[in-house]
View 1 (cartoon, rainbow, N blue to C red):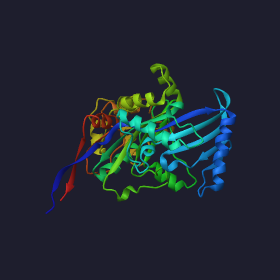
View 2 (view 1 turned 90 degrees about the vertical axis):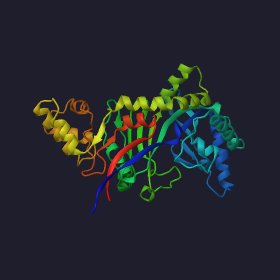
View 3 (view 1 turned 135 degrees about the horizontal axis):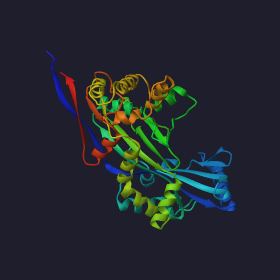
View 4 (view 1 turned 180 degrees about the horizontal axis):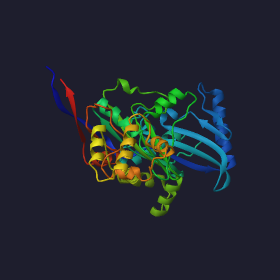
Length: 380
């Protein structure tokens, strides 16, 4: 005879904690400097067994020579809103790969001061014989990705977290950005594991790191993994970094990176708290119970129930609200009213093994204090 037992799934902070992952550095060049770099690399193409540089688009040349060492370099000759027309070298840096080319793509930059020293030395060694300036601090920061990796030890619960998170509503003043590819099926599959909200100064990203295609084009198939890694990112653009330079009185990349590594936990949690309600994901029965038992008027309760029921079939809260609005439902302020009851209108799968799962705000807050435990039921 079978029986139901209660077990526990866990979300755990990865060893590197809150820090940074990828950043971009830039440097403005004179026309002669830019041409020197470009011509030297194209000359190497003639004698190298592998392509060192190629034209990616008009005025943009991609340097492929250092990609396996964690550097994606481009030479750009393009219109710059600040200086009319300029010549630039831009480097997207994966610091762990620069220090150790065999490092995995899952981990992030350890938030200790020695990491910066190691990066400076490895950057210099990598570019010392190249056409580029080999001193990290001779560039300026043009983008930084703050991030944290959270590992789950239960595959089904991890997948359900990914599924409900991708349905989150777009925060005010942000727009949702989806991955676009020629292969629409491939893009749609990727977007089931990835969510990005963008505003003028930064982006908020949540994605299934075990599924994402790596920067080398290698795909990790999460179906074969016993667990999953969920990544939260805050991607800062140049305008945020310029403000930080003024505040700290320095434009030194190493000093700015160290500052952001130390402040990454506080900054990541703050951005997500400002953009999303601190609510739980629940089973539809629990959602119905809380709505019916609330003090809202019957008409408001019916609209709330309609929203939750439609969310069982639809792919985003935005889509359902727009659909209901077009049908004449009064949906203004509806989400705020639902959230005041402590839950998200996005239900868990019917008969899912867990009754509740924390939303992104509480998950980040609790993971910074220790592991997050989620009770679930299993039939034996």
